[in-house]
Length: 230
Image: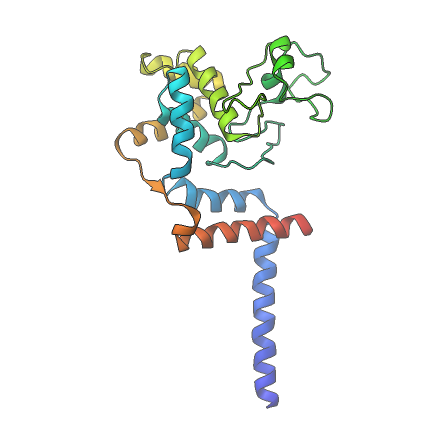
């Protein structure tokens, strides 16, 4: 009996140590990002996003696959309302707040950050006043940078304004992507996904339709939860 108790105690200790190790690693963005990439990045495009891409793309005459590629590179298809990069870019398509609201808005931050408790970034009148990019994609009277629909429409608008329409050349589309994010590596990454989506697009099912997807999702959620409590 004593031996059985020792074995069970040892097993419990191993489980606790394993969970603790997983939780510790969950503090690191690289681990979380690796999980996103391993599942969402390598298994196609979320099926529920396609209508969003197509609607935004049709509105501004860009290829919906280009939007999907930008979304993949920016946040690996995230539609979380809490997405914020280390430099202050927000939302699924990672716009700097001042870019969304307009650079005519007077703030001391030269990198483009605007505290969201300082001004309403969703206010269409303010966006027009300050010359911002924000677009109301779902016609709810707001342009919300945290909304997948609004941010997708804004990304499509920006790409179309910089030579990224369906009628433009590959070089022009590359230039439009560069204007979106001034990095040649970024351009190459987006173009790689964009070109692959032209010939082979697989669609991730609804969360409840895939046990593997559920396991990946809950593993990620556990890591994020643990990181928030340590």
